[in-house]
Image (cartoon, rainbow, N blue to C red; front, top):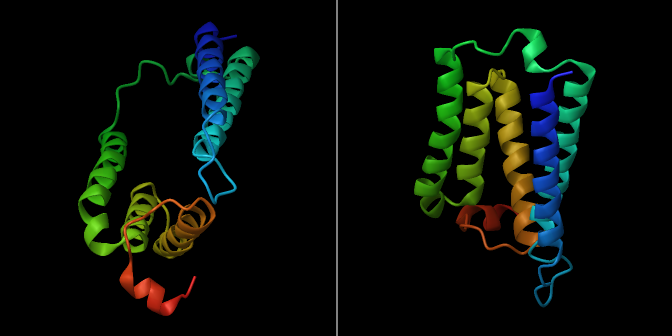
Length: 158
């Protein structure tokens, strides 16, 4: 039993539950089916489940302390992967207004997939499917204004 994993998991679960409860109280915008707290509520529920999973793994004794991972210095590849997430967010912020949401999201998804070891074919498929799915969910289902992609409306009349 790793007490630190159990404590961390329960703290994450508690904070995520509070986040989801707080998000569920946000008002619904006129003309939409979902409130502004729909996505944060889903994220809070996911965080609560992840926290409970961490606590359960700690209870079973499968935490980082028993696996020998604690105290290991970070590798250069691990640091590059970590920093690539921040770099992708910064580049998205810089280029999304110029290129539109779909190309910027595709570049972020595909680039991060490659950095984390996916094959080129898998990264390209994830980039296309992920960016179009995110576009449909956020722009049409949740009605979140996204940076416009002019050529997309000509090809796809959604």
